Image (cartoon, rainbow, N blue to C red; front, side):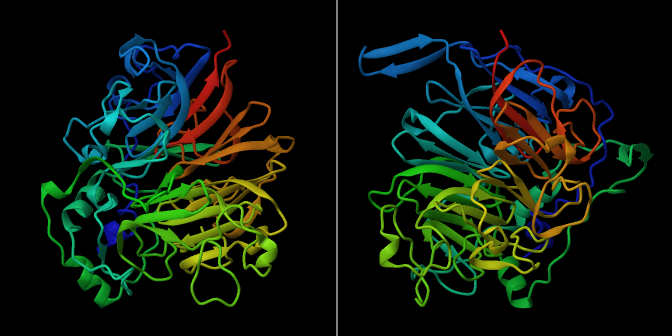
Length: 518
């Protein structure tokens, strides 16, 4: 495979600091009514004046009117919608959900006609994203350039980059899956676009700050991270380079994902080019790119274009993995590799995945080059593997970034592992961690984390007493601290009286659902 695509599409951050980085407010200001508002900071091209990053929290305005079909009235109801939840977003666009079940999106289609269009042409002003059958949405997630949404009746819709949208095919890989044919597909054109457009526009100078001192450097990429390279066998290189191209392959409209009869999805997660969905019986389904094991199917299957069950919990002594549905008696099969009988939470990183069992155990699979699977090595995990160092700690939340993973325990502790080039682990250093490390920063010493979220290279938690802390990469103000200085330890975000209810990171931005102080 081309190196650009293999390193989550050559995210070397060669872009320079923008010449103007001023604090601004989003269109309309204010909240959605009912006391709930959405606060945003970071970078969304087109959503702020002069395409400047938001360095501090600013409120996002909902559309003033929404027409909702009603079986009771036999027509439509026109009224003011309210904010319900935040879902983060992808590369250049944001996602949130309204009380009417509308998926509200905003960001930019990019005035240079670049690859934000592959995520569905989200507009610069927040508005309801058109979905088939006017589906009422309860959950949503976004990867680099694809989105997934769950409707109130448990159906899944997805759109964006066609490589991420199910087509019923398996492409390449070491082993066929389910007897489906292997095919060659389009990568060259998509890879080229992702390589060129994966970061905000460049300017002539970048300001970097280390140890409290700022310095300006010319040219590109100076002081920025260079992702580690992975060797690709000649056979895989030949398979991946043999592809067709064409604009018709770049984007797909929202479509209904076909799952087995009776499967009802309750939440979804989106990685760089792969997707996970969790059913109401605790079963995980996956599709998309799986070359590093991020689909947990035991081999380097390059493309799974049909949703497939992922064997996250496997009994001892059995050659074929199986999911144990919710309600099964653990006493009937007492010897499990992983504590628990079903999955309660899922997360996708750039090319790795993490899930939590009902017993609070963490399972990871996928790319491990930075230790983001937490297994004590930098090997890829092709099959779901328990993070043994966290056994005995009941984990209740997990989030994954481009190269790192965060977990929070039932007692409110924060554990991090993986890449740490920008301080995204919050450990106070810049070295990677290949096993989970508890955060003992003074700023969160007496705090209990309730929610956790990861952007591409920044992290955020919300505490049970209504505080928000961010750390990591801050080149575009995604930490909400009023500057563009990276942090390697948690720093509290000033919210001016707003009381947070949930938090969700996008690739270059952060969203908070909060109660208004007035």
